[in-house]
Image (tube, rainbow, N blue to C red; front, side, top):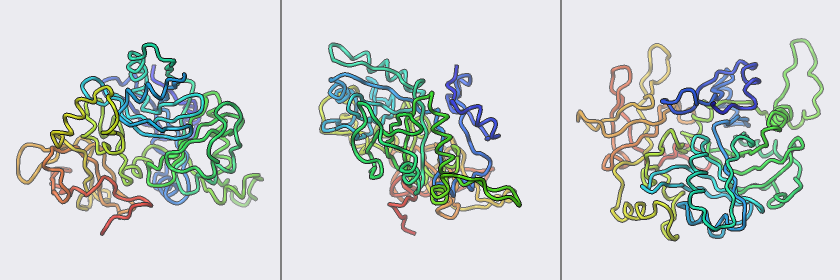
Length: 416
């Protein structure tokens, strides 16, 4: 049975537009995500100006306990984990023997355990794969995807909301940095609505991003408190606003529940490719555009390391993930610029054979609604400035390869 969000009934009652996340060949295992609550433009605007709360049942968690957990992980994954202390986060790949990516991981270390945050479709495969190599280590691996749930707060005011509702937690994991000073790639454990919540920072949408890991039995209560404390309540016409003890917080935070579509637009603009969308189980690390962030070339051996090293010595992979900025051509029916769909083939000049395909695309609000996309293209067609052609509604649409994956973020302003 497909995994369900503990908020699924509430999403249906809110008449959210839902979409299926999962593999096309196994529709019964698809996970229901909120696409939008009906106002995509407002959801995206809230992400950029204020804060959005996003339910993420498509994310999974593996937990490692035991004194040998980090030493073991460091021998398994592509990133160097030496020096990773409690409340720190690193990103890494977990590869198979052929050097292909079985999972894209966030390694979150806490005083008594280490969490691996990843796509839920890869969770059990990763647990079983890692467990196969446990011999005599003091180590236990558990798939915690079902007992734990995932939310995210994205937007400039998200930390203010967290500071308002969270208290310092108790227990073995309750120490580390003050959550009001949470920096990128740092984590903390707080108490929200009486529940222990792991929070780590990853600005994947180009704004301050807070990723929350919550016990599933407390998920609805935590979600409700975040909405109550962060979202302004509109009074009925001719009536005074209902009393709200969080009024001062609401007026500053201006939270809005949002869905996948708003986050997807923002993460493409911010240059954040996703596993199972822009690359996947057949990809090599060098093909993802994330090699420097996920792979260490100076650490010791790990599963798939020989293939990674051989490809690096060769100089380049067969294909590369790139960012494309397309020309703006108006669709007469909608009045909006046309954009290529995922899977659209890309061609160089008038050559009949494709050199790549689009994996994700969007109209970028921060760039005046021009079409932007990620695409995997053959090496040799990846250089910045290369012009590639696709077709939309039977007409050619030209796109230019960008110098890097990022189109826009607070920290990065593209040159006009």
